[in-house]
Image (cartoon, rainbow, N blue to C red):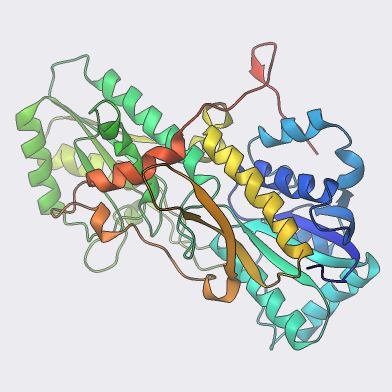
Length: 413
């Protein structure tokens, strides 16, 4: 069924980038160029730096720019957000009508009737607010959320584009760190700090090696469980008694029983526009604690930005799914679907297969999907076999990287 709504479309990227967010953008571009919308979309504009760029009318004609398959293919394998990103929090539609009236005026100026926003939890908040305004003020527009986040913390979907590639990088890097640490017989502890404010999916990925070759960190700590320093010291001593080279994976967002972040003492206390505290330093805080309590050699490694931008180690499965979800968003929009976020679900059976669908974005925004209880061991210091089996299909396949004179080749818009 077609919408009968004909006009132009705009697409933007928001929040933290991933190794696959451009693959999703490529999927939207492909969907428009291939006519998946049934002829409803004439021109696809890209907003530079998300809604901030939209409000400043910094738009690029993506139909004209992506005039060859080579360009689109290169986009699929380029890390970070090619259109640029932002972390702008939209105001309440009922309290700042002037803001939305300005946005609608821009939509009318460029005849934009289709809005695609690629992002995570905060970005879905933007989609939900714009959806609410257009519905209440009778502006005919299709508004679609297209998921991405390495955190894998969006509800209503089995997993999110971008997570598989980050998980692959973490799993591979953890394997390499474990091997490096094993060359000496001196008692030592290495702490790997991994991104994850509220949900520990990324840190759980450090243990995927268990399902492949049996090699995994000795201990894994997720934000889903209260962190206790005395229990931590006991766990470390137990691990050191088994072998001298202990490797521990920790989420940056682990907290004590009083709600205070373990790494809070190393930070300024500053927060972003969505009220999220800036996190980092958890590994360093635990390094200092072990040094004072146990006295063995200890070091911390913060994986930091490479978790989300290591396109040379992207998951082929992740990139393929990201393109498919972007294309499916265009198809759904052309059929009249609006105020939704694209979702994926696993089909029943032993073989890994997905079904792409969509769900009401207002039921998704500002909610957190935590690591399942069944995926965390009883002691709260590691993950289960079921968790590793859930994660394993998401990191399959090696992406086709494009190199030039020994370095990866990327597209710059």
